[in-house]
Amino acid sequence: MTIDHILFLWDYTDPRGSFYQYDGLDQTIIHASLVRPKAGVFEEGATPPWLLLLSTPVEVVVLGLYTSDEAHTSASDIEIHETGFAVATDGANLLQ
Image (tube, rainbow, N blue to C red; front, side, top):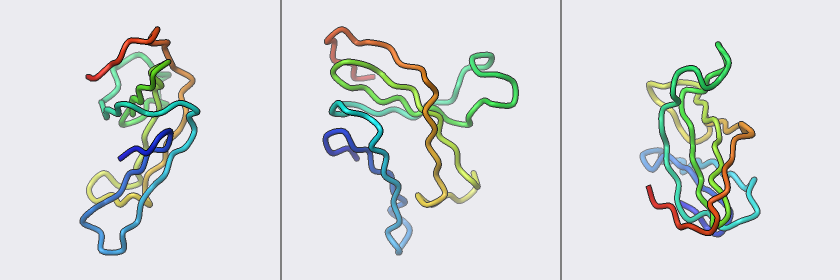
């Protein structure tokens, strides 16, 4: 879920209601996608298991998403790292 420029991730099956919050952007998040990275884009051994793509009115930002345990992960086990990859959208609304 997003509210303005803040992304919230949570495990809705966890009765504790733990969640992760990312607020590293200045612009309103209009779309988020979770994808597997393409081979050869990142350095050997530094490839994140997931990429989180966040679209705003001015850019698409690529973040690395890591989890401590792929089998059962709660929101408290999530780490998001900035990759430095971003591309301007030139005002186009990107949905998928």
